[in-house]
Length: 209
Image (cartoon, rainbow, N blue to C red):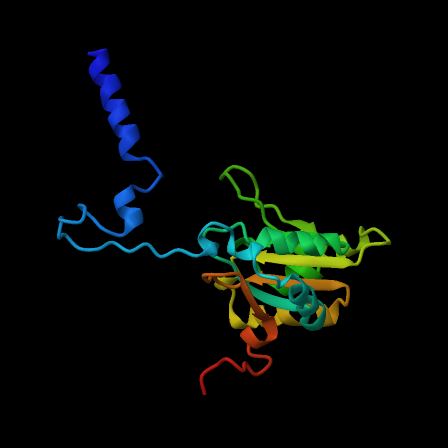
């Protein structure tokens, strides 16, 4: 019984081997006389090395952050690529405020004004209301004197309305030391666009006429 289980385990381990078989590497199935069709393998360097590791775009990333001050980013679905761009901003002296758009509420009230927060009531407690300081202004007051600024990183920004995106795009104009990065959607590679173009505040040259 145990020998049969071990044999089955060895069979499974062989069937899931990540190394391609010689027939696949040669491009044929079933040998030269198989006649069962041809299997072609197409790969590039990007299949073995992360796409962001071979794209020399970090300089352009830093230039666009300073030029536009608010960007909409489109990272790949599998995630992980945006961390490299985040770290480069951290190396420049920026501090970060990470927020999720789903629990943000009204961006203008939450980020720049004293705003109320009602904790959930369990039915027996009275409905309470707590007041919190502005998220952005509070973080700006705590920044180190040598800090370059504050980056407001908004996750899941695709759920925000156009008016909310417009406020985020104008936030660096209201608070000059603030930069805004909004995860607007996903794409096959890490790309970004000025948030004002996405929000409709500036003409989008890539939009169809």
